[in-house]
Length: 319
Image (cartoon, rainbow, N blue to C red):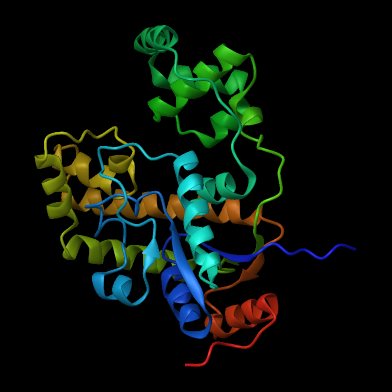
């Protein structure tokens, strides 16, 4: 059997509030690693409190690539991430360290390792027609249309997510194929790194739900609303931008629009974060080649370090 001589890399994946950042930093104390963030909110400058961005002291001691690399008004796609992450991984590997990619954005991990299929460019005429249809039957009606044409995509996309519903219907109209089928594509080439996947998946979600509630309360106490108010005051940011649709930011924006009071903001923010964690865990369970670690069990750092040590085949770095 031929020897696999690809450089090594580690994916540390888990739902929001599962302790990924703390574990990544702890592993950096034991091994020669270079950290790369895999988070669709942390790429944006100014999204700090609501995105649970590591603080300045943490980032100074444990630098993470791909944090604060975009303005919130600028788009950032899974394809952009794949390009940027591969470049960062190459630099880390060439420096003699192991890239450790840490985060919870499953689409980014999937785009990086497996690639994304080539989808058609937006068609202005078709989009205008879809917008007219939506004005007539509503986006719930458009979602029902999508469910008939592409059930897997409709199951993944919320009825109120107009942008994604429109894009899915546009792709179907332009290609004659369901979006969900086309998103399974890729380059067919092997990933340039040999990867150890570590997945933080709790057996009991109650402690995770408790941490989610506690963390959202802390975000509110530490100035989430003031952060979103400052973003709104820029004047160039709208509620439908990807950055502003991030969990927590959407609810804070709607609260500042007067849609509901502070108590409802808290309830909606916690519920949305729990739903995000649920989707992340569902995706993680599909990663059958991942080493599952329960973050609620004793010594998750030691268990992760054992897996890394075995993967690297060498001893811990001397302190």
